Image (cartoon, rainbow, N blue to C red):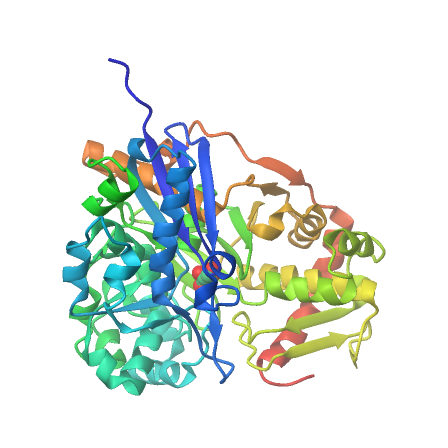
Length: 535
Ligand code: XUL
């Protein structure tokens, strides 16, 4: 009897869309598909997948939207003839930090899912808070200050949990809900992350939080990978029972619920591996195994991350997470909120909405923009923390100016984004030997040229596939192998035969020198803005 090929499925529940990637055992991508929240599920009236509230700080997504997206994507996959019956394990990625609030009917409803009705119909009543706070939310300044005060300062919180008290981190969002909606908190049986919630749908039960995404909550002891006993009571009462367990990221969390077997055509022996955060999953998808391999992910948010054997928590910036592929390892990351949407706003204004025009214009100014520095804060920035939105421009002599010409403007936006990532990456121990670019904007060669010159390293590209859902598929295979042999298999063995990444561009030494010289002044300008000055 010839054996059928075995496939591994990764989902990515991101800010703007829900995606699926299927790989074979040789890690070849055999299928990809996505659902876009705004376009495909317009009844939820999201913009970029989210609802921005009138206070300018609160950002949420309707949780049931993600539930509807799962059924819709699976219907499309089935319609395409995707090999769902041969998928042996599923894992997934979720936008980090977002929380899902489940009431005391949730577990029963998940367990009892019936194949004759949609997930949305059966699960619409399981939420104690209908709108999930997501990572773009920056409304918890008060709660962050309180946590740092209770635990003995920012450095202490960073040492314990991997990051200083951070507004979008789940614990501070939980504190806010407990304070502003005490009845909803009381009615909550389980608080899940986006990642563990999507896994919960698949297993039809509460799924545990994995240590890598769990580190993005300001609630987990980073080194012990257990809930930090001091952080919980400083956040909200009776929290531990509402959070459930933390597991290592490669853990098998159960069989796929019968709903998906009967309704969507999966095999009954398909397993589910713990879901994790999108940045951890991208680290897996980009196969970051060597020290010095750094990923630069250019999406709604821009992130820079890599692996570390020892965490270096910093009170002022960046985040340390548990590694999603090595139960003893760590990952360091910085996240900039002003990513794609900010680049696109400048492109629309200065280059008539065309990337082609933008790239042509970029070639008309020299690296370093003759000393001009522009800082574009379309949204309150995370790294460095700049609350006041606005655009800040300085000429070559360091004087604040009101505007740049269009050609100067397109260069300024890119250079400031990459210089900021170089600077803050350095501060959290990330030393680049090569950059692996991913995310929507990584297809733009002109942009990668600026990245290579700013960092002074070659830039590789990871190919077409979305690295978070691809990484989730790799993690499904990794978790499956670990379960098969009953111990942790080194992640490197999983991707040993995969095709190497393509080098897109080498750095230009002279241009790199220009950026290195400019960096000190850039740092000063940024620091003044983060401190509330300038502009
Ligand atoms: C990371 C962060 C974002 C989200 C959404 O800390 O907030 O990168 O994970 O992509």
